[in-house]
Length: 204
Ligand SMILES: [Fe+2]
Ligand SMILES: [Fe+2]
Image 1: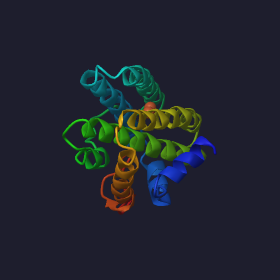
Image 2 (image 1 turned 45 degrees about the horizontal axis):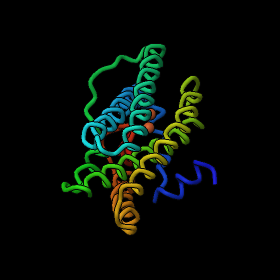
Image 3 (image 1 turned 90 degrees about the horizontal axis):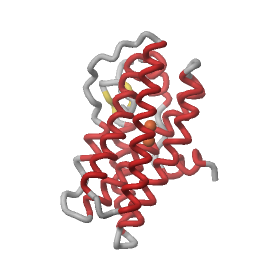
């Protein structure tokens, strides 16, 4: 199975075509919010590095991941400069908060949920890069194709870590199913704001 097929099988729903169309007409927001997402991905990984100093494999994998996300951030900034897109403040969308607020607050459940949410965000980003790469003009198309394989790897890493640290065989599948259900609502329900991980556009 290709990495894309694996991600398509993992996610419950596909990004609506209306989101892809909106992305093509909201290029500045797309680029700015993408920059924010890369920065946030690095900082989420960094938070886990602070919280779980006793988990060796997590420290190694997420250090590599954080470095890669920061590199992506830098690359988005360069593309924004070439496209003359100014980096203005853009409020975060509902997606990440909608998932994060359902992370259990006690350990070790908090760790497992955080890793699962990490995997889902990577999977959805990957799916969106794949769709966008087919429609958007260069140089973004080539850039999104490149990011696609990195984010697919990040998805695998997060899922691997969740399975590694969970002490109960049923926990990861159960929590993955719970968060995917929630995620599909965030993707399909109408969303007034356009963002990299926003829902179905309203009136765009
Ligand atoms: Fe990234
Ligand atoms: Fe990533």
